[in-house]
Length: 634
Picture: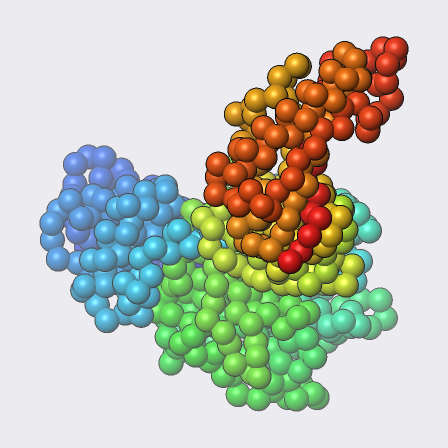
C-alpha cells in the first residue's frame, strides 16, 4: 500500500553518504522520501555491478516503504547475500517481503533470526506462535470479498460511511480539482470523492467531495458524526500555506470541518497536531466522545501507533493516550476503526500476519482491549490490507494492493458470511420428536467446538463459519448416538441438518413383538425352506441378547408362510420354520423352557396376497416371516 508509507511516512529515517555523483543524487531523493525517483537511479547503479550494503538497504527500503514488498524481497536478498552484519530490523523486513511472495518457509526462518538477534516483541510473538499460519487458515472463510466499480488505475482507499453515501480517497486525475503530482508517488495528490450507496450496496459514480475540503495537497481518511454535520479528516500540514518541519518535510495532520449552509467550512486543525510528526486516519467511538487516530509521535512503541483522545466539546480535547502494547508493536499500526459493537479494527505489520499490513480486531471490554486477532483470508492477503470498516448489517469496505487489482490500491466490498446449521432430532423408526437430546458440533478434525441441547420442539442450531466442514453428533438416553457431516457453505444462509436416532432400550411388556420394538428385520426364509438364512442370523442375535439381558422373559416364536401351496402344506412348513428358529436360539444359550414355537401357515397374511391374487415375489416374501411375542415377564 503506497499511501501508508509515502503519505503517512511511517518508517525509520536513514542517513545517506556519498558514493558517486549518481548515488549522491539518489540519496538526496531517498532522504526526501522520493522513493520512486531514488529507485530509478539506484537500480541503474546496481545494474552496472555496484554492490554495497548501503545500496541494497536503500533499494530494499525504497520498495518496502512504498508498499512494493514483492520487489523489496529481491534487494534484501542481495543484501543478505553479502554476508555482512546488518541491523536486526532488516531480518524483519526481509521476512515481510518474503511473505508478500508467499515464501512463508523462508520468511519464518528470518523471523526466527530476527527473534534471536533482538528482544523485540514481534520476534517474541513469533517464537510463541510458530503455527500462526495454520491458525490463520483455520479462521479463514468468514467473509466474502469482491472488487468495487469505483476503482481507478491510481490509488483508491480509505472508505467512510456518510449517510447513504460513501466518501473515499483517490489520486485519480478525473474529477480532481488540481493537477499536481506528488514527488513521493508520481501520482496526483489525493482528494476525497463521494458516491451514493443504494439499499443493494450498489455504488454510484464518484464525484469530487468538496472544493473547500480538497486542496492542492493530500486529503484522506475522513470520518463523519452520525448527524453528518461534523467531519474529521487527514490532510497534509496545510491551511492557508504549507507547513514544514525543521528538515523542510511536510507531515500530515487531522482537521475538523463542519457542515453549514450546504457546504463544508470552519476548517481547523486539532490541537494535538505537530509540525514534526504525523497525526492521521481518525475514527470515532460509538458514542462520538473519543477520537482514535494513528501517529508516529515521540514516545510510541514503533513506527506508528494508535492513540485515542477525548472530545470535550467547544474544540477542546484531552491528552492523546497510547493504546499500549496489546495493540501497538515496534512495527506499524494504523487505520483504526470502531464498529457499532465496540470492536477496534486496525491495520498492522507488527502482529503476525500473511504479509504487509494485515487487518486485526480487538474487542473493547470495560475500556480494555483484548488480544488482537487476525481477520484471516480473504480479508487479509500477502500484500497490504487496511482501512477496514463495517456497518451494523455485517457488510463493509476494505482497501488493499493485493494482486488482481486495477490500480495501486483498490477498494473492495465484503460481507460477513453467516451460516447456521439447524435441525430436528427424531426417533429413526417412529419419527417421534426427541427434545433434550445432547447435540455437539465438531470441526473437520473432530475437535469439539460447541455443545447444546435440543429444545422442547427437538430443535437445535449452531452458528458456524462459511467454507469449513463440520460434524454434528446427537445423543440421548436409550438411543444410539448418530453423527452427520456438514459440507462447506460458500454463502450466508440457514441449512437444515436433521438427525435420526435409533432406540437401543425399549419398554417391554406381555404381548410385545420384539421384532417390531427392536426394529429387527423380518426373519425371511427361502421358498419351501425352513433353515435359517445367514443374513437372518444377525437379527436373531438381537433376540438372543435381549433374552440374556432379561432372564425372566418368555417368548412365543410364531412363523408364517405365503399363500402359495395348500393350507396343510403351509401349516407344516411354518411349524418347521418356527421350530428351526427356536432351535437356533437354544443353541446360542437360551433355556428351552423359555421358548415356544408354532406355525400359522397362511392364516395371518399381512398383505393382499391370498389364494388366486396375483402378487410379486417380493410381496409374497413379506408373508414368509417370524414374530417374537413376549408371553411372560417372570
